[in-house]
Image 1 (cartoon, one colour):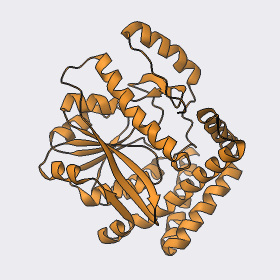
Image 2: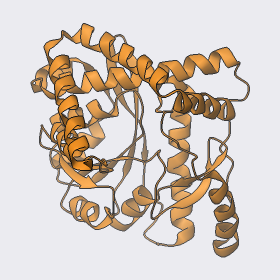
Image 3: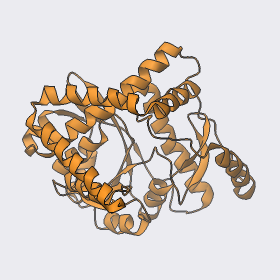
Image 4: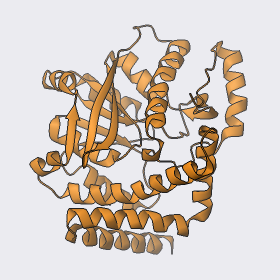
Length: 315
């Protein structure tokens, strides 16, 4: 029965993809925004939690501001889905016409020289189109993604993500695959702003105890490759991909303290991006679902490794 349900969900997804493909670009985006708004009505508990999380992250904001940020965030989920489907079936020139690229010259030079590097991104604006754009601009591109529960949906989504040649790496035990790719000159795109189940550190994220993945820091130190912090936002009808900073590995020494400090630095860049435009972030994800456990884990972590947890609340 479960397999039958999975297949029905897959057929529904395929039908939705076909419908979006038949729409003109502007209409598809409006359709996506309406769909995102409707989902908040279908999932009222999750939408309520979204508003609660925003209020805790930004206590100085009024309830009206919080409600607007939450609504825009969910509208963006629908819009980015429509944009992604449309872009996946465009030619490379047409995809690039929808975006603006700022400051990626250093990334391009390194990639052309066959040297590995990491793009440090979060779930902002449209991270799915980011994957397509990176595949157009660079060679030997890999992306990490968490497998979907529905295997048919998982296969279809990753087919679209890989349609321009990027290689998929599962988020479960990705280190060795990523390390090999970096040593062969690969470019790896890592979304580091969501909760994780394994290989995690504990620290405040927007002021609340959370699990933070150290994968980017570990890979950068072990492979001695730079990390490029990328901000994604909208401007003038286009999606902008801007390199804001080159974050170099601290040193060749590998220790828990070094990894922790490096992870704090990387995490702080994502918090900075969220504060700049909170409505563009994926608040629908339950980022703090194990908050109580994380509070206790932070205490043990500080005691065991002698690291000082830093506060990441509202500035």
